[in-house]
Amino acid sequence: MGYEAKKYFYCYNKTFALYLKKCGFDYITMAKNRYDDRIFTLWEKTTEFEKALVDYTN
Image (cartoon, rainbow, N blue to C red):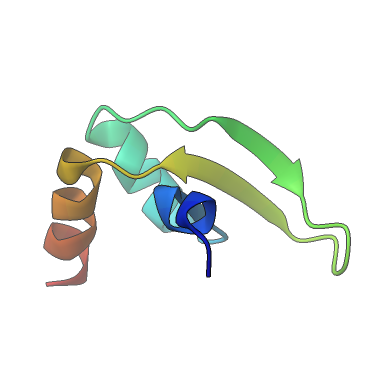
């Protein structure tokens, strides 16, 4: 996995995406996966973002 893949987070979970928005993060884009037509949001990973990810999973 290259550096660019580690810099971004693909979220297919609407509940988690709403949580991130409530935490003050904005997604880069919302799109449809070309292989299975599922909707995802793309987020840039930052230190604060990764903390929110850990807080959500605990």
